[in-house]
Length: 299
Image (tube, rainbow, N blue to C red; front, side, top):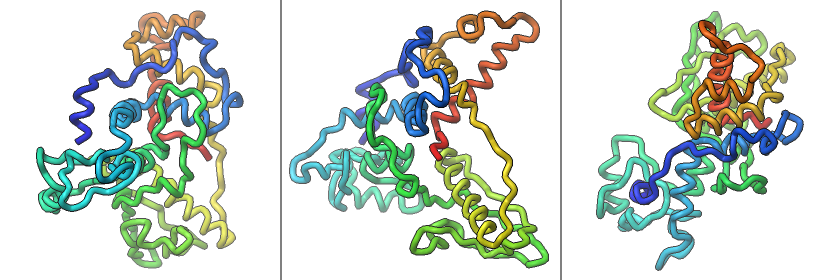
């Protein structure tokens, strides 16, 4: 259903949020914004987020017979409902005139998703649907526990050890207790077995990385409880560069070339042939910035 909406509103993604040449429009350092505010700055520059927002904003807020439960904010389709009249997220798309019942039967052997568009935003982005043009919105992000993704991947690969192979369930909800804590049945006191996770490259990587982090943190917590905590090495996010990352994202969103960005952001640094040092640095920063648009560590 939503593909038809998108086709009526073609647009290039990502689009810039601000004028990248105006440095005073950007925060300058990590301490200027809190974690949620930085997360929003990156999330609203995510091309998928922008595209889905443009789809979402043009959906009707209510429909005859079902009112606000038409799938935009909440509500599920009934079996005999034609999915073209359902305003939630449907993937893969339904066929013209296809009912929900027919859709389920046709996709019985593949993975499919039918949910309200708000639930889709929460699952995919960890955020309520919010206009990317809003600078200081309230209550964008949901608590981490509400945006957990219980997909089959990442899946653990179990290595042999002197304790033998240990069989774990494949998904977190199968071995989470009533409080949501993850339990792994290995020797946490000695912990001689590496943790190996397999990812499905045919699915979105961001949610899988988030789930992988949760699994690893559960090990970390368990080891701490056993009196054998993992030795931590501090990892420093490049908070001083966050404002620069945002400018680079906006510059590339308007197809600015790397040489022009280098000249504007690093006017006193040599970017000449054959090393092109500044261009290489910009591309590295751009890659990091794009990763933050997909998932920003708010903790």
